[in-house]
Image 1 (tube, rainbow, N blue to C red):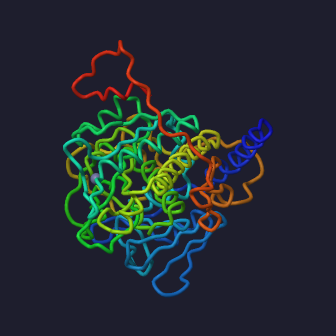
Image 2 (cartoon, rainbow, N blue to C red):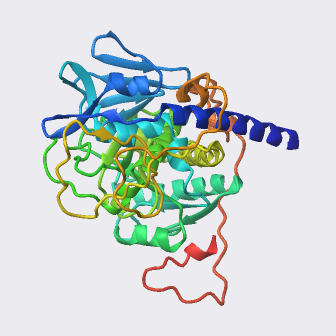
Image 3 (cartoon, rainbow, N blue to C red):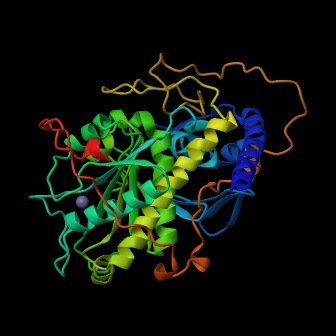
Length: 446
Ligand SMILES: [Zn+2]
């Protein structure tokens, strides 16, 4: 075990040095063009920044393929596939002056964080995970046709996920561990009050169409862009507190969606964008997972069984562990971005941005507040030595080091997996201080 641990560290550092050098060599500003009031960058420029070609294999597909990353875009569409997992862009891929282009928000807050997570995750540790089972008490949430209540399934999934995470040495707190009600606006407050570093809200879906099924994950929508549910690029969307974590929330959401779909084999409805209360006010990287449709008879039936709930919980826990592994790897990779933190204004209209100005492609996601970022990268002292042999994306495999998500083809049936102890919760000590009107008494006990 000790030898294995040493080998992991050695591999980690090896990738780290190569990744850091080549990432610094690769990072530079991209030229932006304004189209219909929004800023865009060409996919060709973006791909070449990673040292990769952009190809058009046919139909509506645009492809950027590297050794460890495959990005698939759709002409005139918002659907993209990143390493086999569906991701919804903020704006459709469009032709600008003859070149297929994506919005600068998608380049900066979606694609680049997923291609180079180490450049965005190293600034903030992840010691405490907050799980937020949706609804509760007087609020049942969605109700399945067979009578299954969203609040009950969400709580059970959260308890099972917490058990998996704790078995891996992660500190976990829950916004509720019983059938009680919290206002939506209180939940991010509880997460911050409990010292959380990461917020995952757990819900079940419902819709009027019985055939709709699958899993989808939400991360905060970038400032000035609508949620995925609104295809029109209209309206004013001022920045919200969680926009400070645009990059890391994207990476968290992607890891959750990828892991959940990989383990459950449910339909992949993708990583989407929203401004739900619990997302927009979170003072930490945050995602909301819709773990299936109670309005779909088959999914409701599955979600009623302990074995499928256990599978879903494994997907949630694995996604969180993969994210934490990326954070830990970022800390040793020296993959820090070259630019100062970019903290969006909290309210008010956006200042008009100059056309064709360079876009800083890397901004620290989680650093302290600072003055507006410079438009050019700071000079970085690089030790003399041989030039990096491979581009950043070729040097850094995207697979997390901790229990990577198994491919569906080799996934054992639920019964064959390693048993995980049932969730156990300590009662509050008799001399515990009385809870305030907002602080969940369970926060301090786990
Ligand atoms: Zn819900």
